[in-house]
Length: 357
Image 1 (cartoon, helix red, strand yellow):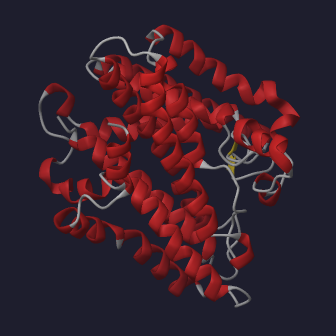
Image 2 (spheres, one colour):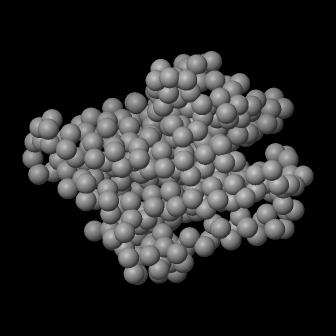
């Protein structure tokens, strides 16, 4: 049975990603990181990737459980299931990098690891995670929370964006993939593990709500700490309590809490056999939730063309920049509806399903 609230949270996550990526390519003239508009855009961006990865972890875990439900599977059986998925996800990552390549005004080197290589790694370890108990995965989750502290300078706390998306040779590329890239395995696999726990506690609302309550308490502590120490609460990078590049321990907890809260809200009563939040009134988001990987790749094609046209041109004023950003974000909702109505089998999601059979 397809869960409607899962499609909705996927849709919300990809819309947030489209918004923040568009804002990065079309930043309005004169806006700084301290402006309220910039803070709101960054907040959506800070929520987007954690939600996207968490719900992807949920999906990978669910697929792995289904794969193993028919009985014991030998190594060759897992290889024939995993490696086609790896190939599709890695291909999509390289495609994204080419579409928004730095040589054409974009943000990536052609070989940059990113979100999709993280999901590819998650697919690789999924057969191991599915064998672990909930308590063991909860322990791994806590280890991931403290991993930024353990990594220390190895994560590149003073690096610029361009340091994270460039690499010389296979050793540096592996380091970008595993611990100091844009979305390295350590600590971002935290959200994959969180997604597996979300799946396995789907029939126990109380446990999930306790997670949210604990996370909300820790979030309050980070805000108080920020106020008392005079340190910014959240920045994309730099000296702050919450940092995205690299992901700080506080960021993992706070963003994970908000991702769980967003899921809990959109879930409504569906886990108990009822309706998701707002019933059919949010059903227009569900087609988009079925093609998030396709939209993720496709929106970079649009942004790559925009970056090429805007290369060397002055920034837009606030109004046209805002309209372009919001317009490019919401246009994917009707596009997804039309896609699901007329050509639902033409997508990267369908390709993943076919190669995984």
